[in-house]
Length: 225
Length: 225
Image 1 (cartoon, rainbow over the protein chains, first blue to last red):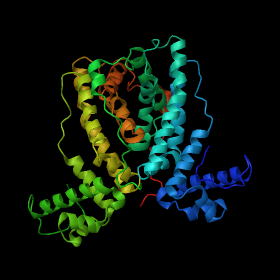
Image 2 (cartoon, one colour):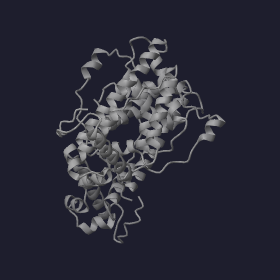
Image 3 (cartoon, rainbow over the protein chains, first blue to last red):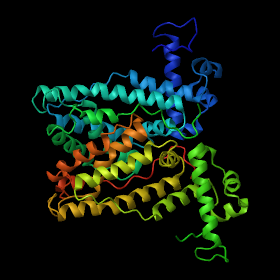
Image 4 (cartoon, rainbow over the protein chains, first blue to last red):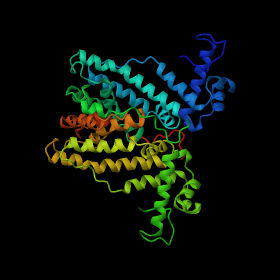
């Protein structure tokens, strides 16, 4: 990762700087899961990481920057989407992963979502991370088209993936209801026949296309900008 | 509403107390939308409402309590679910309402979601509000069964409603992407054929039922308890 704020001249690839970065990120994750972003301070992170406070400030200028750092690091992880041999199986496995990350206590993923309501830059990084994750998972849809499970070149992969995974986020992160063991499979099974029936067709009527509006900015009431 | 903390003996139904409550709630909503729950203080609410600080404290003992108050008030509003003559139309109209509440800037609904990550009691009130809202909307599903659009007595109305509305919450409150004008209709059209095909069947296999776990508590990392 290119870090414009990391101007240390003595860094060596995979050496001291990489190790310190890992220590700092581990500390941010631990503090975040334990006490949320409200409890996150540059000093607390330095203490937990066992590094000097100035080292933390050299990486990022504030807590919002540290959050961006952990979100970026999550995006750097090489995650292969599931490959079970069927679209239904792949989406169920994907939902199972999402369920595990949201239902664990304390959930680092939920803490990041909470933080992204408060830090504009964290919200942007989180949005980018999700965009990348959904882009990685588009191959599930491509494989389903190749297998003949979906009509060729008619499916908006991202819309299908959002529809298949949204009930997990809504139920576990927002509604905070029981983690229904059927939910990963049920959400997948809802999306697959709809996709096969063309509900995520990329074709738009001219009227619908004309109604499209520009993207809205991240909505973070009272966010630290 | 029964308010155990409102012990003023001079209240008259619809009179002074009701008016002051309305003023305080309006002030909480305005402050919340403007500066988020981080900017919410008992003093700021009193000033904006034009009442004495003690009046605010008599209603609720802290900011978390004020949030519960506005959430409870939202639940008291008499909202009739849409009745368009078809399940697809009803769900599209419902999603249109949700889209409008989430995409408006600033969004009071999004501010409440953000707050519920931080205040345990607000999270509980928000969960209850959603439960009530989905319960009110179950009549959409009942009417669809009566019209023969769905198989009788086989559809878990709440699961269907969550599946139909989740993409709105996920895309607008969490992913923060463009408010796609097709989304309300598309999310409805995804859920309807799945429901007709029995994806939200209430029947559980014995194995699935055995895997059921108890409800998890509201996850609010670093929440004020």
